[in-house]
Length: 130
Image 1 (tube, rainbow, N blue to C red):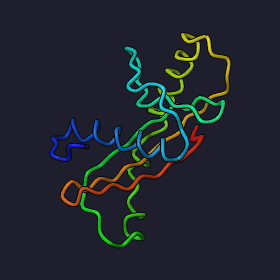
Image 2 (cartoon, rainbow, N blue to C red):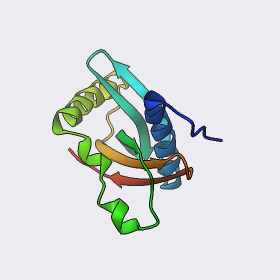
Image 3 (cartoon, rainbow, N blue to C red):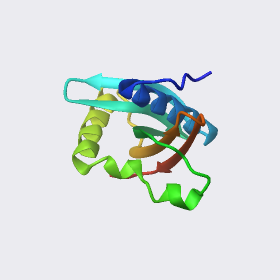
Image 4 (cartoon, one colour):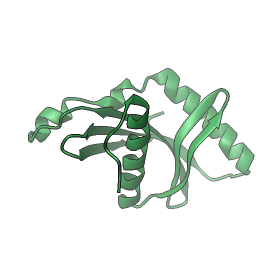
């Protein structure tokens, strides 16, 4: 059961947990979470088929209305800037080198909009963003 009472830091952790569940429902296998190095971090390392996916999660907490079209106008994933994606890419290269993994890989982003009061979340996956 996910805990929805949170402060700002816990919001990111909850968003990553929701993103993991979302990815699993989409056929991904979550391999690792929060791979950190002094110069970068990868929120989720996953696999789909024979390809490694490095997933950056951007989660925000706000009220979700009944109107899907209104929610689709708000895009937390757009707050993931190119410089952040480049850091993820450098860290992904290091990860693959450390694991001596020669498979193909890509960088994906999951945007998560959470409504703690209604205990709802909406997720969107953007593949191969860099």
